[in-house]
Length: 306
Image 1 (cartoon, rainbow, N blue to C red):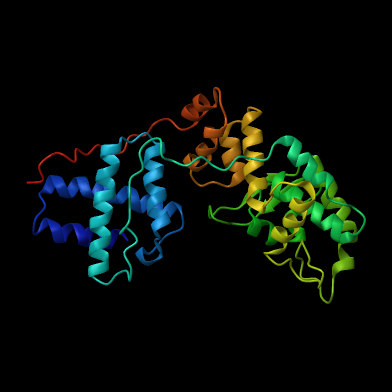
Image 2 (tube, helix red, strand yellow):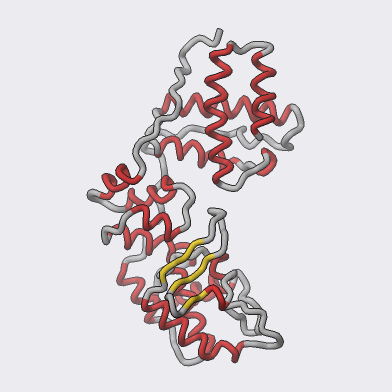
């Protein structure tokens, strides 16, 4: 990606951009490449419009002014126009790239209240091995803040009942992590593991959560479970909402934002900081202390290019 970037800049340097303009554009576009690399994008062809929107939101969260973000967006549009023209990408992901005003970033969805979380757990029976598995599913999504696929991918060996930890394999953050196993998860895991073999049908390949056919749980199963729970409790519950809710609940309880970042497996603390918009009080000061403002190289888009 950086080689393509250098070729793009050298092409313009030979035709219509001054050395100062090339330096400014390179600073802006290298920041984009670094953001994309942190989010697992290694080829221009893999970059989506959502990735580019996320980069601009990241710049906004860092305090970059609207006029500077406009300059970043312009440089990205020019780059992707060149990538499309030269055949390095089939479609232009930056075609509709727009810069939001400071008050236009959408709030995350409202979390469940703690009373609603209690109601969700109360709606889960505990009579059979399937019931115990379902209880563990909800505990892993809420108490451990796991993403759905992270939970599906767990093996029995990923649970350390002695150390009371859950080992989460590399996911969206590209880094594995250890999650503390709180009391509810620990109890649910013990109860389920005592009867898990009843779900086996054939060789045991080690998957923690088994479907009723004895294989690793289908990725759609947690959503279906929570649809049934939603009908029971009278409000909508889905896997990501449980993860989202525990993050907000811990922030409201005063947990350090770096701890929340580690729990959620966010590669970038700015992703975690979005939750602060749902949490009043001094936590914004905690965020500033955890991630001091790092200015992007200043560029004056009104300056002449020649």
